[in-house]
Length: 200
Image 1 (cartoon, helix red, strand yellow):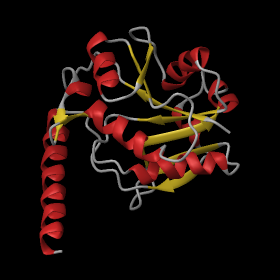
Image 2: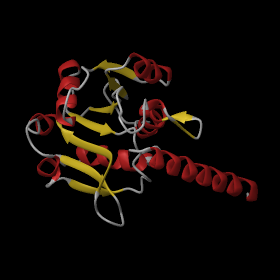
Image 3: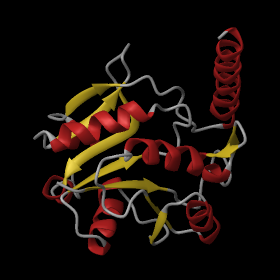
């Protein structure tokens, strides 16, 4: 099976203007998502991915700058399932793993686990918070026919029977406060990583 790793990046955002170009730790939210996908895909056959799907020229360029292919979307396309449906019209694949930009602290292991679940026979898989069991929105994966069946369903109905993958993905950036929190947590994580390197 060959999946597509797809990163939605719409141009318009109400609470955080140009959100997907905002930086956390010196990297845009798009770059963080592309890098998670690139690590995930190492050694695993994926279809042309990762791919950024966007309605915005500047965000398309940001995706290209970091090694992603770009698929064009119409402004206000609607539900996530509709966005995936547009991507499927351009690329012939067996499955799609949707990787959100809004979790810049997200772990590549969560994306990899969702993709592995599909490759091992699951029809749908989604990352959830280990503490609450709630969907994190970091990675959603489903076989192509499953995505196509979601177009008129609510998110709750779409993912009620999905395999749940625990993944500690940090805050969901949906406001300026979330963005500040993500930046602060990222700085702490990087400082800890440098401290460990120094101790070795």
